[in-house]
Length: 309
Image: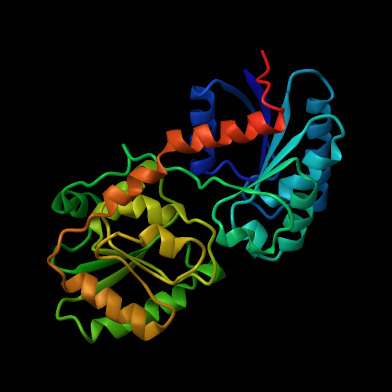
């Protein structure tokens, strides 16, 4: 059994799924989050975090440290005993802390990224292991039932924006502009819904209630929202960021464009189409078990192929 210390800034649903699938594959996972919860962390929080990491790794209980998100990298690398696997999620490498993530990747024993596109600025080797999705939870449901459950008007076309509008890199104002422009070309009324903060198990219902998902992000790594939408057969209209073009390749009824006009035209095409989407066929490639096997392969390579007893 490989025994891992999993460091993380926030215990997001996709991270919890990662832990579960690793444990199903025989990996022991002890999770240490950065103190501070959802509030803005201070330097003191990260100092306390390092103390917890140092204490945990001083004994014989772990074979390696897995630092999930770039800001956990310094504490992982500052402990001198265990090898380090660093997973970069996207915003850590592409956002304001990108330099920290890049430097940590230089010294980690293995670096995992969500897409090839993320790794263009990294020096050295890396392994692409996208976050997996639960294709049992994210699956097609009857739209009328989903509409009734979320309380949306069945006589309106519904466009899902799957993020908090305050996240600047997701560009909610652009989503509003695109929907306003699309409204001029579509006879039906269109409503844009920003859905965030709902329990993860309820997200599939919102996706099945929607007619399209709009993702006008300025940057992404390998967004789970796109994979989850595909698994629900929800058409996606998005900017060509991260690995989104690759994710949508072969998914009928989903489009990428880098202009407002192109996004609006694509959204209008989706909302007026009578064709049946086939995104779920594409989404089967992003299952949790595949992610678990790939991460276990990274662990084994770091440990020179010797799985701890």
